[in-house]
Image (cartoon, rainbow over all chains, first blue to last red; front, side):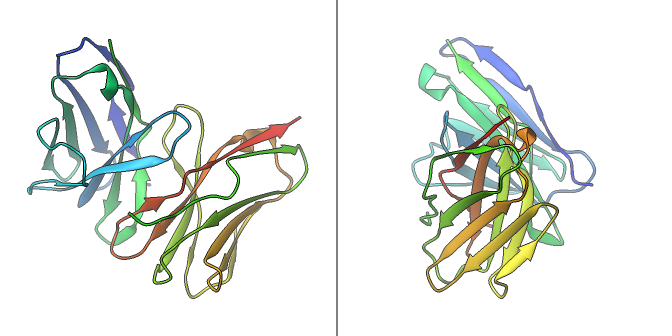
Length: 116
Length: 111
């Protein structure tokens, strides 16, 4: 199997606070994890690519100081939205790949962030 | 990013009919394509994939067709069921593991 979990599934935070989202590969070691953002009725937008033990690679236009990514182990990556604002409200989805199958991304269930 | 887009943003079909969802891609060098299904409030689920050296691949009730000449990809769902209602994305993988997703088509199955 290849199960990816995310926690929390939903979070509401106040403007100006920070929130951390966890992405875990439950039954495999993930060499690479990806973070996506999705707006309602829109496609997935890649935010960053994260490799264990190294700095994440951010896509153009994504603020690395705003969206902190830590890939501390082969089964865990975290996304921290710092000083959140209402415009950061979105659906955040992570995915992970196995070392021997880099073309296949296994997606987590997503985290709904609402900033009030 | 790569331009991977869908022709139809919404599609409604009668239960039992066949569904065809289309996707256009822009990079002729892309080697790998995947169709994903995303139900409301959930992450994308893998449906079927196809490599560039193939024209057609069949799964259970689903078939993916690849036309490299016109850079077109389609997903055919046979005997569409209410549980097939979801948003369907195509993804293009030009190199390595970088994915580029299309805009998505929302499929609604009418009972």
